[in-house]
Each structure stands twice: as C-alpha cells, then as structure tokens.
Image 1: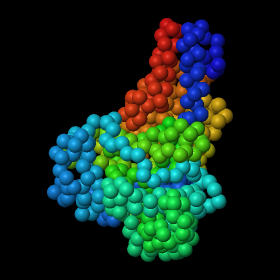
Image 2 (image 1 turned 180 degrees about the vertical axis):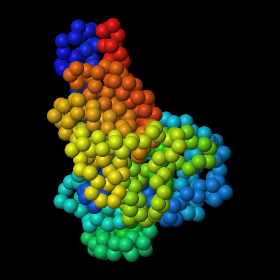
Image 3 (image 1 turned 90 degrees about the vertical axis):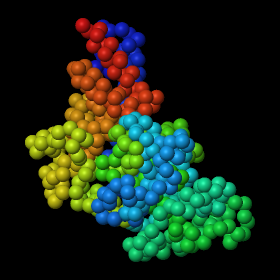
Image 4 (image 1 turned 30 degrees about the vertical axis):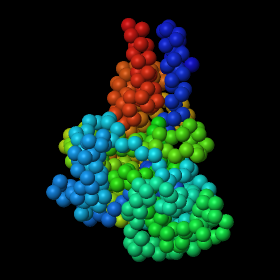
Length: 472
C-alpha cells in the first residue's frame, strides 16, 4: 500500500480502492520529454508531422470576418443536417470549418475515423531512419511512410466518391515544397515510388507492375499532402505520440491558431494503448475548449504551443508554409490566469537545476516546459512524490503562458499534482483535493465525462474526500 495511506485507520475498502486507482494511473501520467512539435534538437515523434493541415496562408492571417468567407453550404444547412460545423473557404486562410451554432466548452464538434494511418514512432522515432527531414519534417520509418502513401493512392482510386473528392482537395503545395526541399522530393520520386507501387499492386491484386494507378508524380503529390495534412496521433491519457493519421473528410480543413478553441482527442484500439502498434484506425473527436459563437472558425494548434514563440513561429513557417506573425496570441484577456513573475521563473530554474537563458528567446517561460517535464518524469520514475508535486505545480504555472485554462495538459498535470500530494509523506489532503477537483473539471471538458482519464480523477477525488471526512 502507498506510504500516503499506511498506518491510517480508515475504511479498508476505501483505502484499497484508492491504492488501486493510484497504481492504475501512475504509469499513464508521464508526458513526453519533448514538445509534440519537433525542432532542430528533437527527433521526429511520429510517422508524419506532429500537426494538422496547412493551407497557403498569408502572414498573420487574422482576417476572419464573416464577409470574407465563401460558404460551401450555409450554416443553416449544417444545422438541419445535424452538424455542428460547416465547410468554408477564406481567401487567405484557405479551407476551414465554422461553427454552425453556439458551442459550449466540452461539446464534441465532430467525430471522424482516419482514412490513412500508421502507428509507431512513439515520441522518439523508431526503425532505421526515414526519408530526409524536410519542411514538413520526417517519418519514423520508411515503411510507415510507404504504407501511408499506398493507403492514399488506394483511397484516391477507391469506391468511396466522397473520400476520393476529399483526398483530391487536400492542400499539396508541390511547387513550394520542390523549391524548399528539392532533394527530398527527388528522393521521394526515386525511392518511394517503387515501394508504393508494390504495395498498391499487392492490395489491388494486380500481378504486373504498371497495372496499378501509381506513378512518380502521384506519389510526390501524396507525399506533400501527407506532410501538410497528417496529424500526430496522441494517447489521451498522457499525450504521448503513437503514430500519425489523415482525416480528409473534415478535420483536414481545420486551421491553426496559437490560442485554439478546440483540440483533437483520439480514440485508440486496445492494442495501441498497450504499446503493440495497432491494426484498427484511430478515431478523432474534436472537442471544444472554449465558448464558440455561430459562424466562428474552429481552430486547433498544429504544434505544441508550450515552447518559445520565436521557435513556434519558425517551425510553423518552415513545416507548414505560413507565418503566424510577430504578435504572440497565445495569451489574451480572460484566457489564462496571471502570468508567472520573473522571481517565480528563477525559482523554477533553481528548483530543477535548469540553466539561465543562454540565447535570445530562452527567457520565454515556455522554454522551461521541456526541462521541468523531464524533471517530472525522473521524479515519477523514482517515486519522489514531493518532487513530482513541485514539478507538476511548476508546469501548471508555466502553462498559463502557453495554454488556455482549459487544456488537456492542464488537466493531466493537475491530476499528477493531486496524486503526488496524496502519495507524499506526509500527505497533503487539502492540496490533493484542490488539484483533483481542478483535474476532474478540466478533463471533463477536454476528454468528456465518460473517458477513463476523467473517471480516474473523479473517483480518486471522491475517495480522498472520504478519507478526509473519516479523519474528522
């Protein structure tokens, strides 16, 4: 039994249930050491860029007035069809989704099964390398790259007319990609095309090469579409990247925002959750993080925004061919609580042994997130619960700079802070209840009331309250 519960004369069933819950969720709460987005010092975390589609957007791209939209069916049509969104096109932001009615935080806006997917990569990249990293990043392995390209070709020539049309409309920017990475696309045409041709021939049952609808130009275009439109698939219980997928019917039309109003929660097959890859496609749930008015654009973050803004801006421009502008819109009035002070940031650096700023941009408090996350994972692995609590609470403070108050990372870190308060010696039940109360509320919005992660937070909160009541 956990030290936090030893020697206490409370109800045996309550103690046993609480200990069981702690054991169950402890191993799932580790966040990836690195942000989901890749940088020059990080390995590619998935078989496709850790982000969603990019369209050819203008610098800044803030013009979202309703007068500029070109509707693909009216919002009223979407409501009558039972949809919470409508497709639209903006002259600078490209294809997009707009809310068809007022949306409350926690509503599921769309549900879509992946048309193209591959598992693997798990945050650090596996296999024997892959195609050279380009403007859209790289793949965890060539096999995963070829598999997804073959799936795309088959979808383009399959029986589903809606899927064929959606695949054909995916942004490719082939000319821009050629200009930015000529060597990369040359390798795609030369090396990927034969492998994709063999895979497609086997799937279609054609015996001779050349009978399948595959040529170098098709593979090149599919590769560009995959780089610009594929999403990193993450575990909902710890945000670890487990693969990549393409959702061409609807989710591929989502645009980026530094302070998005929605996020993608993935439903994964059991074998994927158990670390064994997976044969079934992931399902995307787009969930609202904030109130959204009818006609507002639905947005997500293509990359983890918990990083210095200069780095975030450069990666978005390099990987997805648009500039979000110099203004940092991650934080706005009413979006997050008060920001951490310089003294608080200095204390965080000292507490976790992090170096002071070495270069311009490192003084951004978001730059501390990676280091503190590593410290958290080390402490959890060693069972140092006081340190786990400190790191979790420090991350919650840093997240005020990067995320909305309602964000999956905020919920998960509140959960780890609450569990650490319970497992420390001596336990801090009051702080535990406060953190778990916040975790249950946030996860109820981000993951949903029925999600296992939300249930864990709420059940643990209830049990701890019983413990506290029994002590009175």
